[in-house]
Structure formats: structure tokens, C-alpha cells
Image 1 (tube, helix red, strand yellow):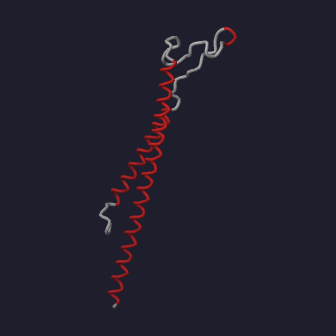
Image 2 (cartoon, one colour):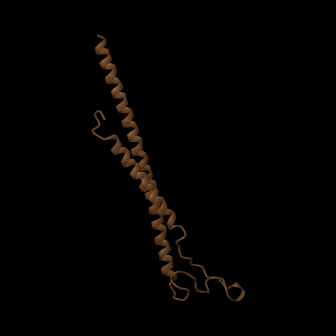
Image 3 (cartoon, helix red, strand yellow):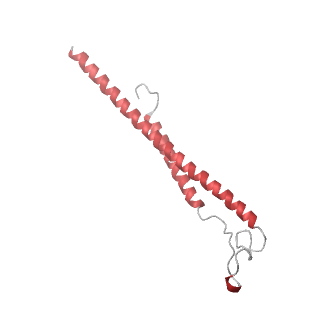
Length: 126
């Protein structure tokens, strides 16, 4: 590219890699959905049970008394989900921005080439 010291294809490849990474982050974000641990009582027993009086069914056991651990896990998971969603968003934005820069560089390069050709044609005409 005239005057930019940047390989246009390298810039486009970088943009594509960022967009691919954004896709991977989106997949990771989607994969995190539904991984929370239920903290509610099962509602079984006499008259459907009374919430809070029955042990919660969760990955940490129904009778292990680990509701606080399950809640801490869910809180941590929510933070991770937010971070991965943000990673997806910023990576996608970066890929799009790099692609826009590549388009601008390409247009500037084409404009510079046209100006050089016009200047050369004017010199030949004199």
C-alpha cells in the first residue's frame, strides 16, 4: 500500500481472526446459559411442601446443606457470563473496526493510485 507500511491482506486477515474469535466467544457465552444450580426446594411432600422448609435439590446435594455454596457458584457464574458476553461484544467490535480500517486503507490506496496516474497523464500531455 502506498505510504501506509501495512499489508492490506494482513490487516484483513487480522480482522477475520478477530471476527472468528468473536464467534468463539459467542459460542462460549451461549454454552454458559443454563449452567446455574437451582436453589429452590423441590416442592414435594405433604401439600406440595413449604418453600424454605425442604432441602434444595442442587448439584451440591439435596441434604448436604450446601445452598450457600450453590448460591456462591451461581453468583460467580453470573459474573463469568457477563465477562464472556463483554468479550464477545468487544472482540466483534474490534474485528469490525479492523475491517473498516482495511476498507479505508484500500480506498486511500486506490485514490492515491488514481492521483498518480492522473499526474502522470498530465505530464505526458505537456
